[in-house]
Image (cartoon, rainbow, N blue to C red; front, side, top):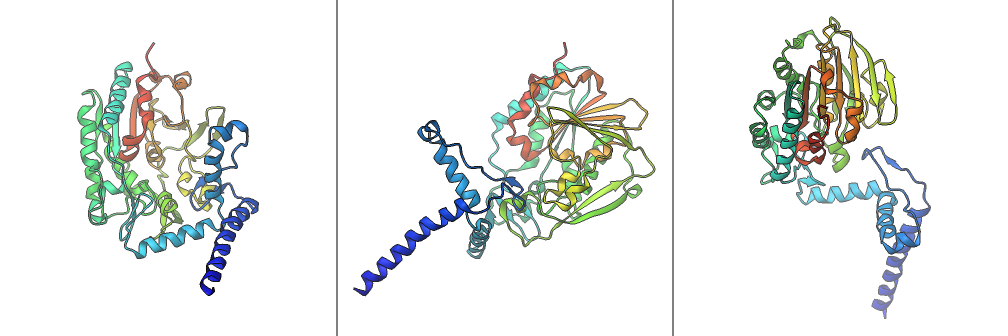
Length: 384
């Protein structure tokens, strides 16, 4: 009898939990952006006969409950603690090393890589009068492979970069930044909690790149470096919620003896907004501190300077270009940056390739290996 009573009590408690927690979740106060995870949270799905029949309501409802579950981050942190106690070294695709977090790259689909390479080649052929350069940057996992957990599967980014460079047309100039970054691996060239390189890593890449572009780099010692924030925890932290790695520093490099930015124009696809700086300091007090550099991702931005050489550079890029671009401002009167993830094939309505002296294709190896949008280049900006 006593056992039966205990079973009934357990069943009642279990049912109460199943009912009360979802109800509490439904009626609790909602936030629709997670600062910790740096992402939008799900909104309540549209309820209709159609969404019920096609199951989109239930799928959306499950995501909604998951995103807004009572004390969700607390549950996630508890789960993380248990997994770490059991010796796990990977959390949601993020590897935990002694001093940094690193991403687990998915297996590389070389047939997809071939399509992206073909698109760059086609772009160069369609615009043969403008020199094209290509820079593929390794991520931290490509440089610090020896710090990855034992037996952790990881793609060889050096081999990927060599493969891409080896299959580009001969008239496309490739830029090797892997070797200089590997040589400088003991310096602070990558964030510990984020997928980007630091401004120092970007400087080393700039030093190699700008010489290929035909200029002399600004000597490192000429820069005044402002440590603008020392509390940055980026995408790797947001994905893993592992908080035992030291926070990162956001640095702003200034060259007071050189050129100035005169205008920064952001085109969000609907309208243009002008700013007097390429640094957005409001982000220094927010979670997404990397957006201090050029602001958040946009389809198209243009930097104008008081360099009087009439040289214009078009950069087709991912977000690795954001802390890289400030170094370029000493050499060009105008720099336009395009993010193919956010811009459509109508980009040629606002960008005329023949206006530019050079084109730089700049991606990190991880984005390049997974982003289908690079293929847009095969049909964009055709000479007429």
